[in-house]
Length: 166
Image (cartoon, rainbow, N blue to C red):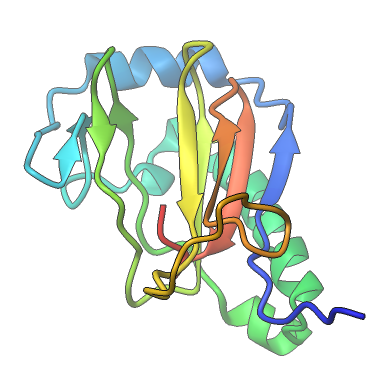
């Protein structure tokens, strides 16, 4: 018999029914507040623009917050704890073919997420297990895998604990 401990939970919602998606894509395309650096090999508004504060995104972030609440409750957080959680940072990334983000985490946060307004069929996000530095098995299986991947489908929301490398 095997017991499984310390799971990594990724919350996935397809078709968030974002009715403002075209308006939001157009708004992002009009912005000139992006940059690129060694960690972020994409055009990003990270640390320059909080998208959740913009009127074009208010309804979207209300929906995202409701899914954050569901995720946290499933993890065992109390209603009082969940009610204290606020979205404090948000940004957008615009990537082209060959662009990428280096593996990273989000310190000083509880929940992180990725929402895809627009994507290409081959776009993916990878989640990684914490490095444990032991000998790798010849064949990975559900007890030993080291990463998983998700397609970055349009109107898909992924939520995960902020300490999960991705």
